[in-house]
Image 1 (cartoon, rainbow, N blue to C red):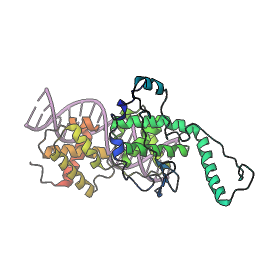
Image 2 (image 1 turned 90 degrees about the vertical axis):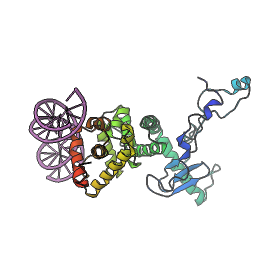
Image 3 (image 1 turned 30 degrees about the horizontal axis):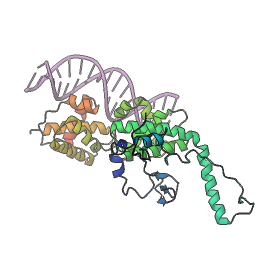
Length: 323
DNA sequence: CATTCGTGAAGACGAAT
DNA sequence: ATTCGATTTCACGAATG
């Protein structure tokens, strides 16, 4: 399946470039300061060495052809070399002696450099099997993320989390798919665009229970420290899925904020509260929203919606019931 | 007839032991 | 690993419009 020289360059590039502008100046993993390495074109964390941004990837062919003959001549099989492969397949080994090729001892500054190189060389080689594992996981993460409409930044966060899990040997006994899904779930929550467990399991091959277990495991072992989701974060998505008026969504937001202020929200499932708030707001704005409709798209049972939305009315403003 | 509301049994989860 | 308390869900029937 040869790809045409020109067509492929413009089409499917949409969101990825635009949001790379002046992103964060600290490492997402250890919050150390980021350092720009001009030799490799990478941005690297000064503290833990995490590579944050690799060079922009150009998936098109790196050559151009102006005649059919030229096209035939330049066409070849395989992808262009990219920076995604750390050594482009050309591994080397570094000697352990602190001498140069003629046997002379290196000066201290050079020794330090070599020491660093050796350390990284070691890491790269011992990680080669992990890298293959990572490739597969990243593929899954990207696939699921696009199915859920999650942006590239979230995918990057997910891959960082996955990498950490890999580094800490958290994988044995767990499926790659499971950890990948859990990492993406965690990343979505960290980015304040949470997806429900049910939504995740729809695009993943693992079931809800395993996802939930794996996520908790990651959360604890990696000390991800993710706060419980804010119900408000679910509102925009649910609202647009239900096709309700802005007015209604706005009322729902007010109800949730009131609930938060009265600390009614703690201990309850955030998704339930969001669903209940939408239904309650629908009553207030006379929008014909049935419990079953809300239940349908939020995956919250009608019973729970009933229980929660009465709570919301209780604390919000007891005078509103007549309208 | 559709929608809403209430109830009790049952499952799942987090915390504590 | 088990137990306990709170929350959510399921199944059902009743009331309301």
